Each structure stands twice: as structure tokens, then as C-alpha cells.
Amino acid sequence: MQFSIFDRIYWLRAGLGLVTGLAVDFLFGKDYTSGLLFGAVVFMASYYLVKARWGSKVTPAEVKKLYYTSIGSYVMIFLFVWILAFTVQLNSLNL
Image: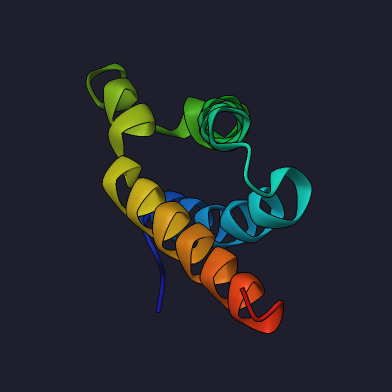
């Protein structure tokens, strides 16, 4: 089964949301502003990665879709994993 370019972008960013959520919890802890900024920077970096990898394969009318594909999934997975990891970490410390 062949996946489209936008399916690949979706799953790439979903995976990045998961990894970034875990990384932010372990790197920044309770520093929420740095965590949110790091999450935004990773999403912006994913745009340039996607544009370099698949940008030439899409039509000029679809270039905007490179940025908007999976932005909601990235944000929701990132926040969910970050909150879950933070909660698990707090429970393990018995606070």
C-alpha cells in the first residue's frame, strides 16, 4: 500500500509530537514557557524538513498544505504526552 506525501507528513509530525512531548518534560521540567517555545521550534523545523524532503513533489497549489498538514495532531499529541509524562513524574516523586 502506497502512502501519499501528506500521509507521511501526518505520521512524521505525530511521531515528532510524541517525542517532543517526552523531551520537553525531561529537559525543561516545570518551565512551561521554554517547553512551549521548544515545541513550536520543533514544529517549525519539521516544516523545513518536510519542505526539503517533499517540497519538490507537490504542486504550487499544495505548498500551503505542507505547513498545515497535521498541525492539530502535533499540538494535541505534544500536549497530551507532556502532561502525561509530567503527571507520571510527579506521582513517582510522591508529591
